[in-house]
Structures are given as C-alpha cells and as structure tokens.
Amino acid sequence: MQPTGHLRGDAVHVAGDARQRFHDSGGYGRPLGGDEIALSRVEAAHLLFRGDLSGVALGDGAGDGNGEVGFERFFVESAAAADRFAVRYLVYADLRDRGFYLSPAREPWPGGDVDAPDAVDFVAYERGSTPDTGNVKYPVQVVGERESLPAAGLAGRTLAVVDEESDITYFAAEDGTIAGATDYDPPDRLTGVLLADRVVVWDAPEGLYERGFYGQPLTGRAAAVEGAVQLSLVEAASLAADGVLSLSASVDAAGAAEESSSGGAPEADGPAAAVVARGRDVEGERFDRRLAIYRRLREADAVPKTGFKFGADFRTYLDVETVEDLPHSEHLVRVVEADHRFSPRELSLDVRLAGGVRKEMVFALTAVSDDDRDDTAERDAARDADVEWLSVGRLTP
Image (cartoon, rainbow, N blue to C red):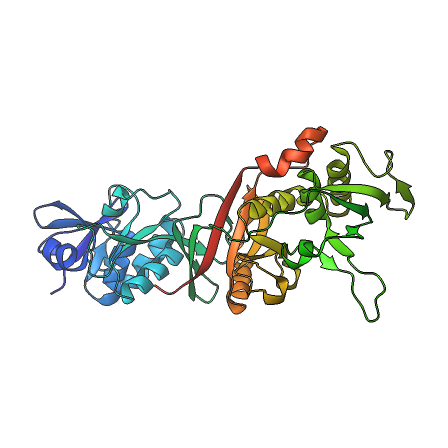
C-alpha cells in the first residue's frame, strides 16, 4: 500500500515511513519531524508518476471520495498554481532518470542552502551524493524555448532548455577565460591611408602580418606592389590608440581624398579619433564594443581575427609564431551589450556552430556605449571598458 500525500500550501506532506522510504533512500523532500516529510510539487508529481504515492489530497474536495487526486489532476492543478511547473517537472524527471538526486534551490528545501542565484531552479548532486552530503554537481536553471534569459551572471549555471516538443538540451555556462602566448610587439611607427572602411599601410614591415597576424596583404598574380597590408578599422583603431599608426591621408564617404593637416604627422589623438569616428560611421555604436574586446584580447596575447565566416565577431588564435605555420583558432567570440538577453534559439545556434567547427563559444559582455566622449576618452574607451566573459557549451549530464 503506497502512502498518500496531503497538499499544505505549496508543499505535499507525507507521513508514515516517508522519511525512510523517500528521503533517506531517494533524496526526496525535507524532514519535518519524526518520519514525516514535505515534498515540493515537482517531487510529489514525480512520485505520483512512478506510482510511489497513491494520491495527493488537495483539501478542496476534488478527486475521489477521500479528496485524493492522481498524477494527471495533480499535474494540471500544479501547472495552474506554480510558475513554469510543466517545464520544471520535465527537467526534474529527466535528471532523476539519469541517476541524479535533486532538490529545489530555495528555502526551506535542502538546495536552498547552496549559494545559487535566484534564477536557479534545482541543484543536482553528484551521483551517489544526497542532499545530506551536499556535493552539488549542477546548479540547474530551467528555460523554456520561448523565454529569454539575461546574459550577465550566467557563469556557473547549467541551463536546461525545454523546446516545444519537450526535448531538453543542456548547456554549461562558465567564465570564459582567454589567455594567449603570442609574442609579438608591433613596430614603433606605421603610416597608413584611411579608406571608407579600412586602412592601407603601403610599406608595412614583414612581421606585421607574418608574425603579428595584423591585416591582410594586398596580393595577386604578377603584383608589382610589395609590403602593402590592409587593416580592418578595429585593427587600425587599436594600433592608432597605442600611438603606432598615423594617417597620411583619408578618403571620406564621398570618395574625396584629404591630406593630413600636418603633412603625414597628425596630432597625437588625431589618428585614433579619425579611425574610431569612421568605425562608428560604418558600424554604429557596436564598433566601440568590438574595439573594446579586440584590445582586451590583444592585451591577453591572443590574436583576434574576424569571425564573419562563422557568424561571430572574432575568432582567436592563442599562439601565433608565423602565419605560415598557423594553428587552428580556438574560440569564436561574439560581442554583446552588458544587458543583452539571449533567446534559447540564438544561444543554441551559436553553440552548435562553434561545436561544429571545434571551437569554444565565448560571449563578451561589455558596457561600452556610443555616448559622446572627448578625444582622450575615445582613445581609452576600449581599455577601460567593463567586460564579462562567458563561455557556453553543450553538456550531457
């Protein structure tokens, strides 16, 4: 004879030998005193589904003559009474089937003792570990396919995304640390021409591209011009901010060429301000965020290159000695605003693509905005930006 539960507020109380039967042997619920335990709605529904509870008395006269209801009625009642009950139940049942004990991650349940953000729904303990031992494996945040979730603060969580067909995809969100070992210092001085959306350095030293992996050479069959390198606006803005790049001329949006006011030696802040302004013209405020991340990656001795072919902002190389012996890139980096909210579909697409090309997907959250700045602030915006790095990958619990 299976025991009966009684709904009390938002918990189901079970008496008899419930502590030994459910809590001590299976990690369900929390002790109330003696052998009685309290189950969360999700835990009670799981035990009803398994047939380990004979029913739950709702206390409103619903159900059979004793006021008891089975799994179907309890599930529907709970879905109406508790936020996101259906998707949380699906994840709870799936992880139970995978051999994990779980607790709701809120007081007064055992999982409420874990230092987890409010958005976390459950804590899953290591296999063989119970709520009493407290060895947490996964802090689980349940997300429906059509929900959105803030990018900030996701590190350290396991995301369980439930799609419209009730399939579950798990993602691990961690701190995204990128540290390279590329040993290259740009030359002291480069001179370039600012075009509509790039900068050309006509007499670039060989190491700029071959060892620093800056830009792309102008090449072609029977080329009579040697040493010309095209820099992206992000690369050029970073070099200009470091005092390396000066501009001898620029071409405005109408195609008109203008010589530098100082004959090839612009004032100190001139090149950086000019390239940043052009970047904003062609890309908007997103340019500032990308520049911020580009500079952070270079400062970490990693080499960022465009990630356009992969739908990202950058791909990164951690250890470049020569372009002729170039390793595979290790990361895809997408730059987003600090208050960005992911849709699960967007997150799944990015992570799936990165995994398909054997790279780690890293999101760079930056607070750089397009507010007006003086020349000094424009030059230092990237260096001073607050950045949070978030790595997200597929997970099989």
